[in-house]
Image (tube, rainbow, N blue to C red; front, top):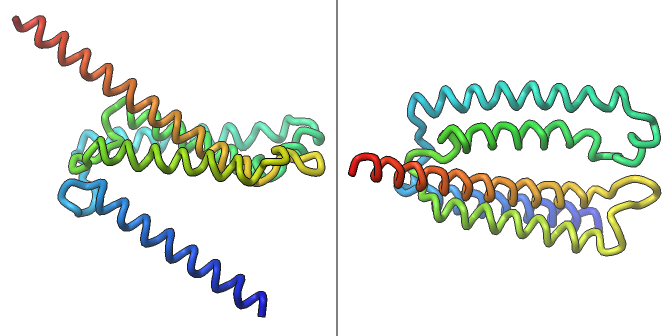
Length: 178
């Protein structure tokens, strides 16, 4: 009977996450439709995927050269680190090449949603790891939430830096025209 409750709980959680994701996607786009990218953005995103792939491959090779003690300490994070590195490289490249946000996205909504997701991941990480991030000589899986929270914070900082650079560029253009 407890297995049935566990399975039902997982199904309810997955349904909840899917519903929340659909609402976030609907809220993030100004016209409520799917994302729209122009040709320049598509090319930049393709280049970002390429850089992300090669980064993930390089990071995945690193454990081959690590001592066994470090591999044991990293535990499950050993498998997630290449993925997280690739994601961060792709997003960073796309943000700084104006290819991350779709043309029909409301940036303020997008930033607030991503900030909430980052904070939620950080809170989950600290709630799961109150006794520490290491158990039996290796990192707990809760460290993954910590990493995701940090990545979301980095993304928000990148978006804010990029928006400041763009605003400064617009100001400089207006001054040069005057």
